Image 1 (tube, rainbow over the protein chains, first blue to last red):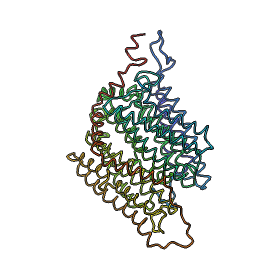
Image 2: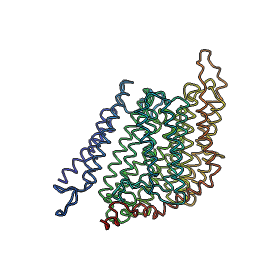
Image 3: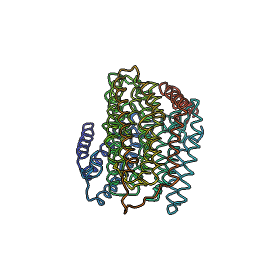
Image 4: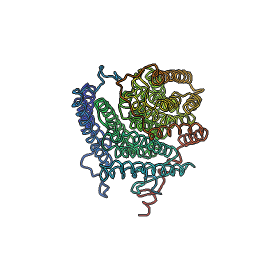
Amino acid sequence: MEFLVASAIGIMTAAGLYLLLRLRTFPVIMGISLLTYAVNVFLFTSGRLTIGAPPVLRDDMTTYADPLPQALVLTAIVISFGMTAVVVMIGLGAFLGSDDDHVDDQPEQSGGPT
Amino acid sequence: MTHWLIAPIILPALLAPFIVLAARYHIGIQRTFSVAGVIAMIVIAAGLAMESADGTVQIYQLGDWAAPFGIILVGDRLSTLMVLLTAVLALFVLLYAIGSGWDERGRHFHALFQFQVMGIMGAFLTGDLFNLFVFFEVLLIASYGLMIHAGGNARLKAGVQYVLFNLIGSTLFLFALGAIYAETGTLNMADLAARVAQIDPAETVGIRVASVLLLLVFAIKAALVPLHFWLPSSYAEAPAPVAALFAIMTKVGAYAIIRVYTLVFSPEVEATAGLHDVWLLPAALVSLAIGTIGVLAAKRLDRLIAFSVIGSMAMVMVSISLFTPTSIAAALYYMVHSTLAAAALFLISDLVRTGRGNVDLTAQAPVAGAALTASLFFAGAIAMAGLPPLSGFLGKLLVLDAAYGTDMMVWVWVIVLTGSLVSILGFARAGSILFWKAHSVSPSPDALVMPRPAVLSYLAVGGLIALLGAHTVFAGQVHGYTTRIAAELFAPDAYMDAVLNTPGKLSTPSKEAH
């Protein structure tokens, strides 16, 4: 299971990083989504992988699942979901306004590349 | 335990929804509540700063859960100073936004402004790394809204870059937090400091990765090379009052670096030796060079100021990365100066924009209200470039003094001094093109007559410049205070004791009672 989880995180991170380096808004947003999936699984595993163990203290139990990373993941999911929605809306606004969805500055703009 | 420590977070958190829900169509009521809220915040922040001035570490346990199990807010000298600085800056920025009418050019300015202040206050006050992440997100999501306030294509495009860059930063932050939790089993900063010190020097791969990832996140916020690319476009395209408020946001990154890298991963910790204590200083020096070159090369006033922000943040980072008590004291003094100066300059660039319609650095007919705007620009530029008599000069002296005798002294002195010269040239060029060459251009007969900026706008900028003056006049007292802060940072026993040994639910004494 460790190998499966670790390689899933690795593949999602690699794919996410590749998409992040693209030039247009849509692939970049996809890349960020993949990265947030990867980080959610990563956070989940930061409390060690356990199967069938309760997260709450009980007298008859010796192994426990760490409840804190689960709470952290929940927070992270909510935040990244909201942030992705915001960036989609702003990106859509920028695309509809200028008919161009490049994420970098275009040379003809007055500001020039930064 | 008093409840005042959480007031700077609760107050804007209550005001913002009230403004959205009850006063969304009444700009007058919005303005009244927003200003009253910020003034109340200054009073509260001043009270907290007075409380901490003698070295008391104030603790607020949320839900009365003891650290490290519950989230806790910590008010020591450093965080209460930053809270006070934020509140004061927010007041002047808000007055400018009202005076110039920026708050009417889009919807929900005041609500977003309050949420932004809430996030910044929370980031300064929290004693828990995951909570720091949450407050970063609060201040970021409010800043996304403020950044694209009043719309426009250029602003939306810059907004997309800003949001994407910060989303990547947030994801990195989560990776760092996951790694830290996996290595140490805690996210409370004081508890973390105790546990990192116990890590076996032979098994440090995880904690070193986490430490570097965390540094990258804070460096994105502090716009350190090579992670500074988001700053020039976003700050230049953001509405001027918003850019002025953002002047404190880069300092949030610097604050987080000071806090985490003196408390948790301090240079003495063997597990993370050879990382930030070696690489931060060269990065800061390169940022300083790039910032000052940008000042010289900029074709528009707002971009010039954005690059000068990179330069002055780099000065702060140079001083921080020496990691000695004198250098941290100098960094804190310069940080206060840099916040006020950057905010004043962004507001001045908007005065210029109001007076002539654009901020291109080309000779054009005289701007409306030129005399007053020019003298404010003169004062702001002197402060930012670090010429005497204003506090930028004293700050740079302190930084140079802190670098004196260290291994990197030659590099620091050469780059800081050359950088100062270059940025003086850049500001002098901008000022002479904007205000002096204007007299050689005869205004075209069909040119629109631009209105003079409002009196309240001038008052807000003048207030910031006056604060810079006060920061210079009382430099001795302020530097004495930052020296005490730095001493406290390098002897964190009082902080750790207050955080970990204050009784609450689940702490050891209460466990015995049950």
